[in-house]
Image (tube, rainbow, N blue to C red):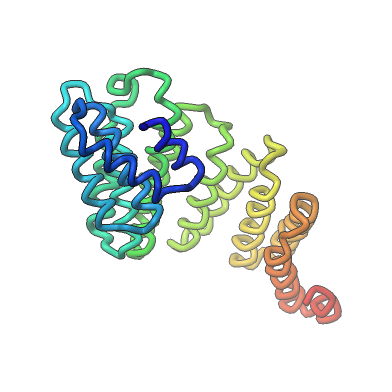
Length: 276
């Protein structure tokens, strides 16, 4: 039945999966299996936005996991992080922040507490999700300085695990760049933006991200009144957007408008109208 329930989840048939998980929980189960059932039941309830039920079952999964002599830290951390996500969606930011931090703290130090070792990619994903959650909460509160520290920690974590050129770093560097720009640090924004660009240029699969990097660098340059340099980056963004995705109409429209604004600032109104 557990296999059937997981297959139903994979097919997004969560109502049917929930029924099976509840039946299994009504029967005697080992503590280890009970943690799995509670976690998976809560996951389906969360997808269906049954928030209170999901929080209840995640809390039970956490409580049972904490009593096991050798708990599955991945499931435990996932239950914490998922609960934080629900609270975040409900607007309860204090609880979301606390749970995200707990999820991070639980699985440190990484190499010594995670067993078996092949769980590490899943752990990496959980950790980065928790860091992103913290970052978003900090940014919502206007604490860009602390948000920057959170992103720096995430960058350090991923770099140490996968090396300085991992594709996943492009998104972290982009977030760090935007965060620094919001904090008013144009130099740091440009530095992180250039790092994001460097990583994106290494991967053919990151063409849309590459376009975003060019657009961001154009924004940072024009905010410092480096208009010609900004123009260069914006035009590079247009080229990569057009090459990467013919449906990127909204992004292209934004870049065209940015270029039009630069031409307006330069007093070249003919070129400005061409891009409007």
